[in-house]
Length: 532
Image 1: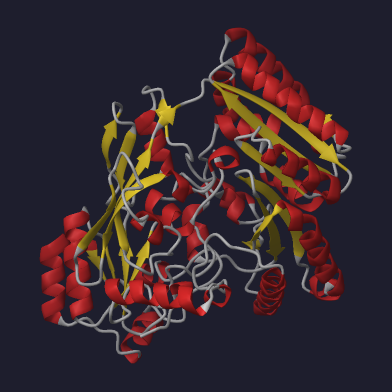
Image 2: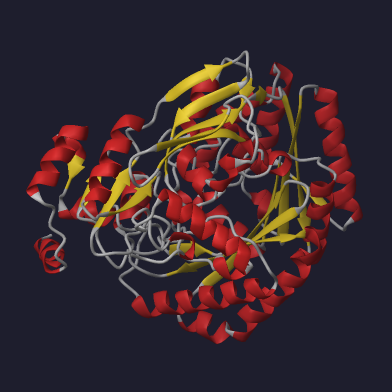
């Protein structure tokens, strides 16, 4: 602690007393945190620590307070780094300058309006997907995209900034596709409003400018999302495949035909990791939600019997696996879609297995993020690509060739690699190589992973050489993905973005940045925009 405080002093990151007094007045003194440990915590994500440490962490309670502190901080030359749930891994909110302040949006957690007549919901940026899900229970409504797997902590503001995927993505795309309007704070404290709440497209799509921007163009204060009638019935299936070629071909066909709200797959290594990590006790707890989700007493009894019989052995000899959920307002339609999915999978060479995984995932969507470490406490980090169906298999061939070329490095440092596959809408496939390696955990792991889970793992000591090897492999993968013109979701400060734009498009991006943030003080470095 003393060493960290000394580091802050040496970097010259000392807040002026007059500014501190103004910030205290704006949000309350207990919400202006300057403790070294907290500043360091907010200056790291799941993968890395920032080069710099913020001098303070500010926690506004609403849009008005957010606008006030943004204006005060930027007037005094501080760069601001907005943070949601903190579970990203691309440096999106990590300080990139000596004179930095982190914005913690966790106090901005309210659901402001649920409009069942005009079918929209407005939330503050720090509202988690789990809280939004809870608030909508009993209404018969939901947002089309309704959350990430990390939705216990992941916020709506962070997800819209990062273009998150998962629940509902098979049919409704990314988080940004469900947004109808935003309130965004510019560097001078002005609040820019986009969209019409109930209707996004009144003139040019101003809302779209601020989705996926990683907080580089302004700090999100409020988000409005459209509502749909929540489908009452869900049906599930899972299949095993001998290879990723047949697996990806089948997933692409399901995606193109719009049959699944969620469609995701694992390679043998990653599903083995998942089977090791999850406990039987957790499965039993999850069973209650699965029974409720089955829709009838008879369905509950059948579901319970199937899961109890399946246990964990059903995945023992499975190579590649894919897990699909279909949904509809009519039970017969949901079942019909799943039967069509089964036919597609079987025709592609798949073999049906127990459907416990998709059933449990949907029934208990927002669990503690224990999967951000390996089953024995290994560090975890992914890198991903979003590609059209026509490119997915050839990219996988190239990725596996790259890993084969560097097998000696992985063996030397005990680096395990696996894959997650996910379809997004009708046109895109996400391929996500995942790394596990022995290394010491960071503060963010210790705070976010369940304490009981942490007590059960052996853990590892610091391993900078393995970490450097993983970093090098991730960089090689990013370069390879760029060759295939892959897109990326949470760009942050990790993926190349500007290189994919022509000069005229880049000029437009820079013009928007200049209008919203003329001195480059809002999350400098995100999207590759220059530091101050």
